Length: 172
Image 1 (cartoon, rainbow, N blue to C red):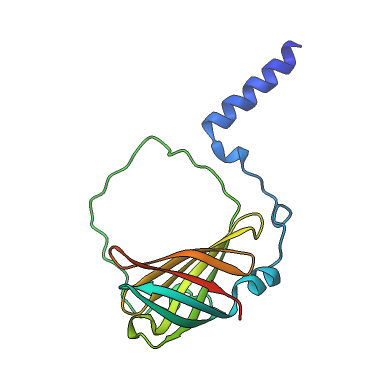
Image 2: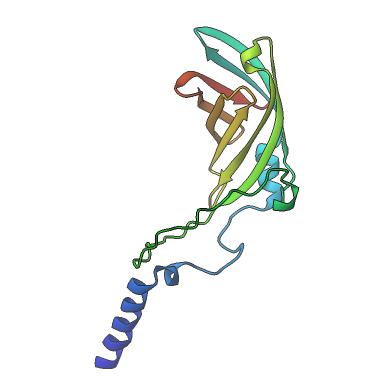
């Protein structure tokens, strides 16, 4: 009995020292969907309405998967790092979360110039495709955020530095 408690105590101490031990190393076993199912849930054509500045605006959105960017594709010079720095002797606690991310590009089309143009962003899904978080950015700085549930997105938010309006999307 004492040996059992000793092993349990050692494992508990190891978990406190290194919280990464609690994270599973399983790859795709914990997800209930495949890459193709995520693509089917998000990519393609959407129809929507937005309320922006008190005006009801209809729009369409076409989303595609964005190509992955490598660090060698960047044309900007690397940031200059100062010669002095700080350090900490306390390791921050870490927690793990099972999440899939996919970069997006697309086109937003409406009669309102505020909701017209190219978009980029990302989608985040967790262990299942119940809620899927979507974030899209327009070239003018506006951001559209919402959660896809099934074949629709309701209660989406349009913002810049503050909330400007709301939107909803559904499949045509």
